[in-house]
Length: 309
Ligand code: NVA
Image 1 (cartoon, rainbow, N blue to C red):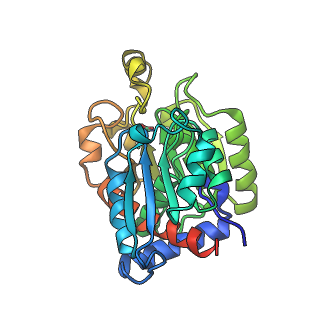
Image 2: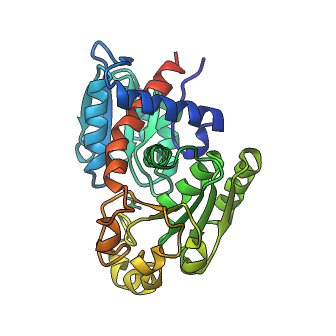
């Protein structure tokens, strides 16, 4: 058996994604029922970008799995600066049972996975945020039952990690994923094609719908994310202008299905990508979504560890 990693959403087959969601639900019911890290074994957590939810939910989750969450200070380690990603991977792989890494370039994560010999988990890169999507799908499943056949509209900066991850993970779950953004902030065509290819096997689909009103019309799930992802701070003024029409306001949400639910991975900027009335309103499930990070990531770690032995 070889080492399994979770680097992007389509690392999981549809059956594996469903298995992982079932495991996350059961771990939510019985938090200490799986102890793959008993010992305790250590898991390295490295953050090269800011974090709140990811650090806390991995830290608490690793402890609940019987393990020791070890925060490796990215700036001290100087990965790729002080020593190569390959050498860091070889060293960490001899000390810990898994590596959780938030960084910029997907290619660095791939390099870590190629040389670490223990499971590597993407805790967000510029391109993907797959752990968030397991939490998001778990949340949708809890509120709406089955995922297959539901329509999800992602409005806002669809060229970021969350847009890409919704395309791949949503299609894997058999959902119809519509992404809506201004020209220049859409996912790469190859990403939409990859999601469509997955959708062809699951009954799901992927589409770019430029007008936010059309994207949201009749949707079961409406998702947005900050317009200014970590690393894009210098573009704040321009982005705030260009995205204004994609703000998730009560008027835009009113076009969705009457029982539509609203997700946001947080941090949220009220009055920008989402109105306060929406995120703090009755259709918002963002606090469940934030809680579900822990249950989802425990399932990811348990799945990878148990399938790597
Ligand atoms: N797209 C956002 C997600 C934050 C969890 C970012 O990369 O900053």
